[in-house]
Structures are given as C-alpha cells and as structure tokens.
Image 1 (cartoon, rainbow, N blue to C red):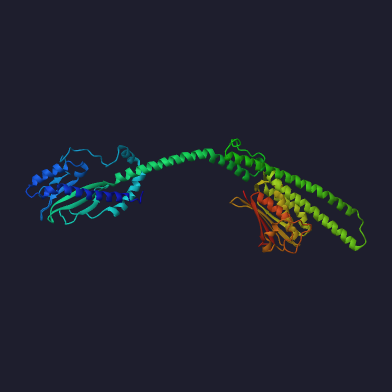
Image 2: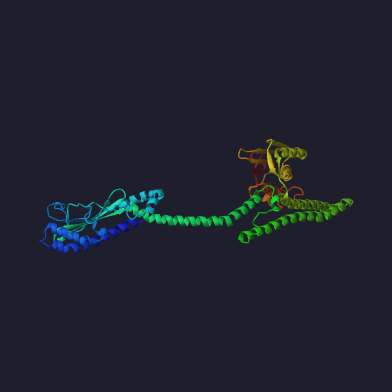
Amino acid sequence: MVTEDTAEVEISQRKEILDERSYFVTEMIRPILEDSFSTHHDKSTRILQKLQLLPRSVHENLIIRPYIKGQLVELPKPYFNGTEPNLISNIMVQPLLENVSPIVDKVLVNLDILSFIFRLSKKLWDRNILTSEIQIETTSQEPLKHVIRDGLEKYELRLIVPFKINDQTVATIDLIDRYNIKASYFARNTGRLFVLLSISGLTILFGLILAFSIALPLRRLSRKLNKSIRKKNVSEDLFNFKVPGLEHRKDEVGLLYRNLLILNGRLASLFADKEVFAADVSHELKNPLASIVANLENIPIPEESSVREALETIAKQAGRMNRLISEISDSALVDSELVQAKWERFNLSTLINEIVINMTGVANERDVELNPKITPKITFLGLPDRLGQVVVNLIENAITFSPQKSSISITLRKSFRRVVELTIEDSGPGIPDALTERVFERFYTNRSGENLKKNSSGLGLFICKQIVEAHNGEIITGRSKALGGALFKVRFRT
C-alpha cells in the first residue's frame, strides 16, 4: 500500500478526461465564439444554454474567458463560470470526502493504521505528482496543465486551452478538477483491509480448529514424552505411559499415540529382558568357572615348573574371565537399573567421604596418600549406589597407577552456576592426548600404553561414563597440572 502508484494512475486518467472535455467543449462553443456579430452578453447567454444540457460534473468546474491581448482574462466578465453558485442549478451540499459512502466515513475514524501509512505514502506521491503552478492571467499558444496542492488532502488539476480563430487566441477554456487523494486512498484500501481482515479471521478460525483437533493433542503427547525423557525416575513413565483421550481417536493423532504405546511397551520389555539376560549370563557362565577354580585349588602343586606355570596361567585367566563376566553382567544391570530404578535425593558429600575412608586402607598398602577436599552438604538427585560405583572406580584406578609415596587429590565442589564437580588427580604416568577418548571405550585396558591393571576387563571407565551420562553429566580426562598424572573430572548440572 505504501509504494503503490494508483494515485499517479488516477491523476493521469483525470488529465486525459480533462483533455477530452476540452475538445468536446471547444467544438460545442465554436459556432458561438466565431459569430463576430454577437455581443459579449449574447455569447454568454448562448454558451450557458448550450452547457446547461451537459452533466453537472462537466460544467461545474469550467470557466470560459474572452482573451484580449494585454488585458487580464478576468476583464471583461467571463463568458461562462461554472464555479459560481446558482449559475445553472441549485446549490447542492456535497460531502467533505468525494465518492465516499457513510460506511466508509465511519470506518475512517478508526483506521489509524491506514492513516499512518497514508501520511508516509503522501510524501512519495507529492514528489511524483506535483508540478509547477501555471499563471491563470496569462495564456499561450499551447494548452497548459498543472497539478498542485489544494489543501492538505486534495490536488487541483487545471487545464487551460486557448480557443483560436484564424490562429488568433480569442478565448480560453479553463477546466478544473479536484482529486481527493485521501478519500480515494481510504476508499480503495478500506476494501483491501476488509478483505485482509476477513482472510485473517478465517485463518485464525481455521488455525483454532487445527489447534484444538491436532496441535493441542500433539502438544500434550509431546509434553508427556518430554517429561518421560527428562524425568529422573524413568521407570514411572516407562511402564505407565498414557495420555487420556488419545487412545480412541480415529485420526492420525490416535494412530501415532497407539504406535507410541506399542513402541514404549517393547522398550520396557527390552530393558526387562536385558536384566534377565544379565542374570542368566552371570549364572550360566560363573558356575563352570567356579568349578574350574575349585578344581585348580585342589590340584597339588606339581614339581615340574612347566606344569606349575601352566596351572598358574589357567588360574589367572579363569580369574580374569570371572571378573570380565561380572563386569559385563554389571554393565547390563546398570543400563537396566538406570532406567527402572527410582532416583532419590542424597548427600553426595557424605557418600564420597565414606568411600575415601573405606579406600584409605587400600591406598596405604601401596604407600599412596588420599587427600580429600570435599565441600560439605552437597545434595544430589540420582542413584547413590551407582554414583558411588563411579567414585570407587576412579579412585581405584588412581591408586593402581600411582607410584609409591605419591598422593591422590579428590575434590568435590559446587559452583554458583549449580554445577557439581568431582575431580580426581594422581601422580602416575598420565594419559597420552591420543588416548583421552579411547579410555572410555568398551574393553579398552591400556591406559598409558605400558601399565596394565591386573585382571582388568576394560569395562570400568565405560560403565562410569554410562552412569554419569545417565545422570545428565559428563566425564572428561586430561593431565593434572598440580600432580602431573591423570585427571578425571565429573560434572553434573543440578
């Protein structure tokens, strides 16, 4: 609406109409003006009789003046002046805005948006439409036109055509038109605005229908799913996932909901089957291993060194296999428990302090000192047994790879951003940069490239990462700046 050129087009059309009227009027009054025997009064009377047959829109803004060289055109009196009241017809009261219905007039009061746009647009239109004002007192050999302001909202269109006899100008025909740009603009764009509002209303109505029939049910379903995904105790929704009112729907929303119920049921069954599988593996494989270990212990120590070494190798591998089966089973149980077990809020500071106290004896056996720096009263929502497993595994790894007469730093703190951070640093060989990601891979056991942990299954750090990520945390590793060894950092956002 701001950049439209309708005003320019309408003014151009009005100019063409003025040209056509000037030609029509000229031909009507030609015989009268060419009569050299008629007086000024006779010519005025005859012109009036001729023009009063025309529609009011033609003669009401028409002035015909005699042209006398060297004199103003107002002197003597014009032959015809349609702007004078009661010249042809009675005075008629015209509305302020041309061609505007009462309905439109009422609408204009409240169309503040259109008024604002109109004010912006008018500056552009004025630059493209307005011309220099012609001097009415003078005439020329050629027709003259102008478009000038006539108040704040109107333009005056004027055309002065010289009437010639034998190439001599004897009169001028002055045609005037007034174009109310605001009335035209509002009359045109009020209709557009009404159409836009109607379309908007239909769009809103259609949107509400879609919202209540499709969008809102999907939003309820999405919120339920989002709540289940983010919920600390996933088991509550895993086995009781329901959204009232969707199950019996016959449309795509109902079909989606029923398929989600099927998928959710299969997922719940999968976790249950995984737990059963872990128990079965532990039972079926550990029984033969227990028998092997028992028989090895009952075999007398042979004198031959080769036989003795073979039996020691068998016992060592049986022990490693027993540990591997335990941790594979534990990994499966952890995965199932993280989903199904109910989370609780507990004192993480107390838990870590108790673990440090219990593992002090193991550290002393290797002549390693544990230095805890635990911020008190840090509470956390999760599974305390599994998080304790993470702490035990990380401290145990640090003890294993620390040299004698070294220390291990254990720090727990909570930042102002509600981030709980556990850091464990040792004085061992550290972890090469190329292996910082591989240490968390399943069955990876070579932390430094040369120090192997006895009977290690390679699942310890994998399980730690599994537990930490299930609690919406992260575990990273690097090199300790203070002690020079490995650094493990666990972060939780509460």
